[in-house]
Length: 455
Image 1 (cartoon, rainbow, N blue to C red):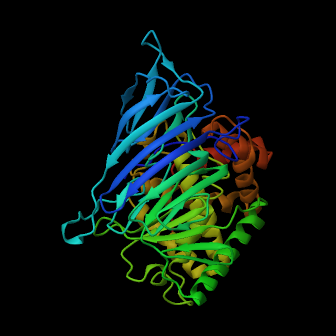
Image 2 (tube, rainbow, N blue to C red):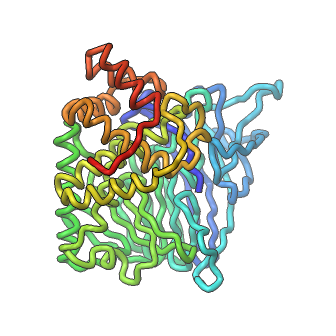
Image 3 (cartoon, rainbow, N blue to C red):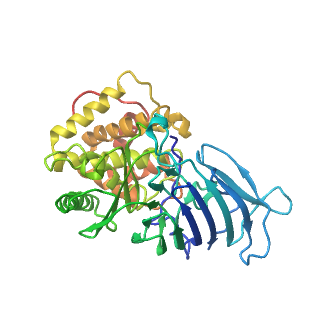
C-alpha cells in the first residue's frame, strides 16, 4: 500500500472558500456483481489552474459534461503514484491544448466492475489495503480520499486534496440490506437519500450488515452485546476527553464503528475516515473478538491512534513533503501519551521498546533532509517508529507542557504549507529562546538521534 502525501491547514478541507464543494447525484451498487454506477455533479469548484480530478482507475468514464448537461468536455488523464496510487488524475485541456481549464461545475458519469472475493482459498495473501474498493461477497467497503470512488479535486501547486465535500446523493442497491455514507445516519433497506451540509470524506459501506446504536454512536456489523457497546463507548469517551483536555481543542462528533472482513488472507488493520473508524479483519464475531475481555488492553492503543487522527487529519490536514509524517507521527505520539496515563506505563514502555528495536542498525534521514516522500525510505518505520520516538526524546528536552503547547500550535497556526520551516517556526514560538531552538534543531531535527531503551 502506498500512502499519498496531502493536506493543508483547514478546519475542513474547504474552509478557505465561501461555499464548500458539493457533490450530488445518484449511485447504483450491486454487492453480488461488484459493480458501481455513478451519475454525479461536482459544483462550487474553486478556480485552480494546475489540478487533477482523481477518479479510481477501476471506474470507466462515460463523460465529463457541462453544468447544463448540454455537451461533453474533452478530457485527458495522467498517472502519478506520488499523487495517487489507486486513481487516474483527469483534467480538461483549454482551447490551446497547452493549459488546463476548470469550470465551476462538472457532471460525471462512470461505471466500474470489481472482483468479488469471498473465497479465501483463492484470495491473495496480502491484497487488501485502505484505498481498495473491496467487495467481499457480503459488503462493499471504500474510503473516500484514497479510493476516490467519487471525483476528488487536487490542487497540485498547493498540495491540497478536496476529498471532504457537502453532498446530496441517492444510493440504490437491489441486493443490500443496509447502506451507510459517512456524515449521514445509516439506513436499513435497498435505497436511501443521504445529505450533509458539512463537508466530509465519503467513506462508503453497503451490503448485508446490522445497525446498532449506543450512547450516540453507531455500530455497523459490530457483533457487540449491549454490555460491550456500553463498555466500548465509555473507553472512547475517556480517550476523547483526554485529547480535549491536553490539546485545549474540542473533539468532534460521535464516531461510527464499522467491522468488515478483508478480501485477502492475512491483511488486518484499523483506519479512520472521520467520523468512521473501520476495523478490517477476519474476526468471526466482529468487534466482540476485539473486545474479548474488559480487562484486556491490547486493542486500546490502536483505537487511541485512530481517534487521534481526528486532530491530525480532519481538524487539520497537513501537506508538503513532511505532511504524511506529521499526521501519522503526532497521532502516534499523543496516543502514546494517552496509553501512558490511562492504560499503564508498562504498556507504554513495551510499545516504545518495540519501536526502538525496529530502529536498531537503521540508516535514516533527519527531518531537515526530507525533500520528497521517497526520502522516508521505509515509510512505516519512519512515520510510526522513528518520528514518534523522536518526539518522546524531544519531550524530555523541552518538557511535557511545551510539547502540548507546540502540538496545539501545529493544529491551529495558519500556514499555506506545513513544511519544515513551519515545524521549526511553531516550536520557536513556544520556546521563545533562539539559542535553545538552535540546539534543539541541531539535535532533534537536523540529525538522527540514537535510541536507547529508556523513556
